[in-house]
Image (cartoon, rainbow, N blue to C red; front, side):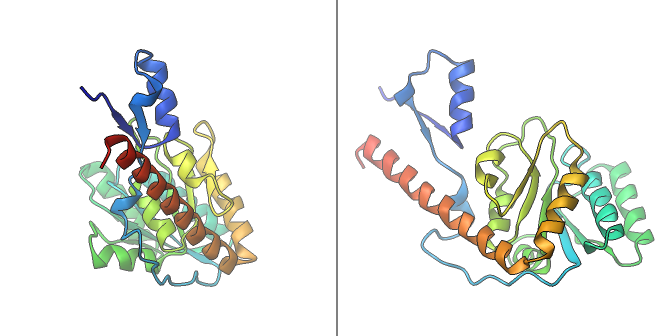
Length: 231
């Protein structure tokens, strides 16, 4: 009998040992979800970041808990500070009250806030190409790895996100900004935008390099799994 648990990060391993102490150390293997983002043997051409003020983006199942309104508030403060000129929102909105709030913000922004609705395939690629910095202000209690963060890094887009679960290990890099869950999101994001302002090209390169490091780590994880299963 083979007893094996696959988890998304080293943090998940620590959590599993805490909540399931009977699980042996060698029963757990960490395997990232990054393989679903792109062909791991393909180095993509990425579009450089634009000149500041920046275009910010937020893509998710748009909910209050996942940070849709926090993304809007962050953009409004960043625009006031001269660090952002546009916010692009994408993803489904199932909450009618939230939809009304987003529609109001889009209407009142005079074109500075755009809502694309759900995006897939080439539309998702176009979304990431159209932005400079990705915001992921989720406080969803069951948040996992955040595939959209990996997709952002794959296109060389720096990410600002709350430091939850697997997100911490993926974004623990100078190309990104991790916000403590108990902190206000906007001040950290604005400070990070100010840092990028002086050298956007460097942050673009670092974000893409971070993705490539995560890809290399994932390949090693798969090799360990194949070795364990004698494949």
